[in-house]
Amino acid sequence: MNHPTQTASLLPKILRSVWQLSGMLLLASCAVAPPPATTVQAIPVFPPAPEQPRFYYERTLYSSADVEKEDKNAALKQMLLGGVKTAEGLGKPYGVAVFHGRVYVSDTGSRSVAVFDIPGQRFFRLGEEGAGQLRMPMGLDVDGAGNVYVVDNAARLVQVFDGLGKHLRTLAGDGQSFLRPSGIAVDAKGERIYVVDTGGVDSDKHRVRVLDAHTGQHLLDFGTRGVGPGEFNLPRDVTIGKDGLLYVVDGGNFRVQIFQPDGRFVGTFGTIGRQGGQFSRPKEAATDAQGNVYIVDSAFGNFQIFTAGGELLLSVGSRSERDGLAKYMLPSGIALDGDGRVYIADQFFRKVDVYRPAGLAANAGFAVRR
Image (cartoon, rainbow, N blue to C red):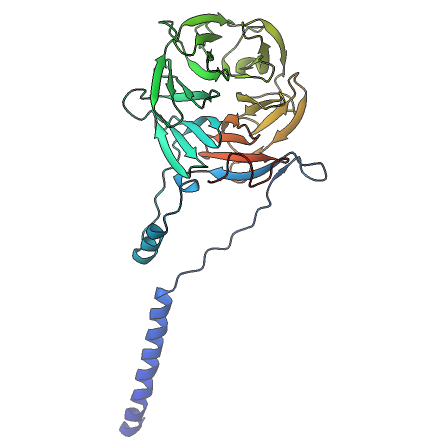
């Protein structure tokens, strides 16, 4: 048993210890926890070493935060007062088009086109309301002046905007309605548009419709349902090659068909299968300045690059149930900018991945902040 005087002498020491412990706990509560450890991922290169690289994975666009200029005052206020930085993301992206670093993504989830303006460091949407309001935007393309042509699958028409989102006109083919429009290509001069009408199981109208890009006048159709040369089974997209030829993704026939601008059949490449150069669920198409053809395949989780004649050159990306660099679950849209960068949209991971050609420096081209 302690003597009362001993207990009294111990009391200041106990109190000092309690105050020291309280101070330590208070400091700990105010400290910022260190970020969780993350695994550093190697930047994907295609093809991998030891082969000569042709494309580097460069970046991913998920939301407005990936392009908007950082507001230092807002960041300081957020740090001092707490809260989470808000950003506007993608609902369900489908198609993608790009012009000089300005990336247009058709977002069926938000019924609009999301715009990632990389050089301008801003994010905005077009077609949300008013003239040109969209219901289900799918395929889209840009002309040489940067005007944007958007297929509205639900409204069965094409809406045209300038690069900043101002609505210019509505095209419906001079009263000739579409059945299920999905893909579109416009020539560089902005004179003709080619709209893929996917059709349906109860229709033979699986075709490409050609319209005057200014008036919407219906010029011609080519294709009907079938498996023969020049026939389609649920076509998905169309792109214009360097040589002026049209490359149509004939999804249900697991091939790409090639046509003259007037609809005359030229040739075809691709078959059903799981090997390189074959197709399982081909979606959208694009071409580069050398005339090569890029085809997205949702089942493979990649895009394949072919020569204009159909010879396989390279496959980029792989299928995965977890998001990651160059990983895809439901890739759908693809586009190339004038500097050779490739943009691919994934519906499931709600993102757009960007690839830089090996011959282009990281700080060069259009996708550089001003």
